[in-house]
Image 1 (tube, helix red, strand yellow):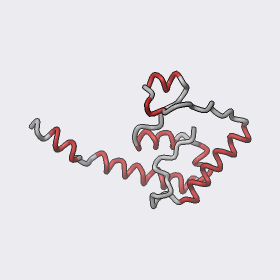
Image 2 (cartoon, rainbow, N blue to C red):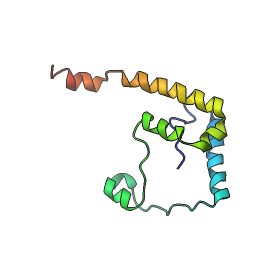
Image 3 (cartoon, rainbow, N blue to C red):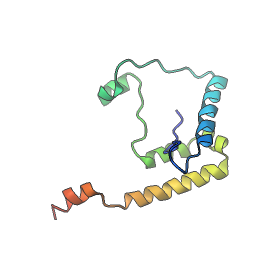
Image 4 (cartoon, rainbow, N blue to C red):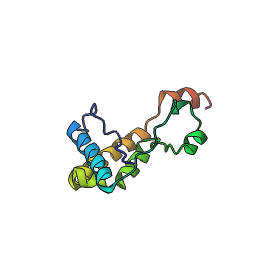
Amino acid sequence: MVVMPAMMPHLPESLPTDVCAVVLAAGLRGIEKGYDLVPETEGNIFEMTDAQRRAAGIASLPGNLDEALREMEASELIAETLGEHVFDFFLRNKRAGWEAYRSLVTPYELKTDLAVL
């Protein structure tokens, strides 16, 4: 599975050409190596329990940006497709954004945790 954290066309740091390049490279790699497609999933996967998804062979996507970046760092395909310079720049910027996000106190935390104090 190719994971592209926050690499979506609507985000300014994610150029649509980069997104397309990685998607096309992943498809081409699958064709070249003869990867088998996973079977079609019937029903709504969001109504399934974790156990039902696992039993059906449906893997979960990363739960947060940190997990997604770890997956991306392990991807030779993305590094080769984007080039080391863009790959490293993207990871460095996303890591900085993740660290800034983790240090924020959310309204939810203020409402629930501050009341305890």
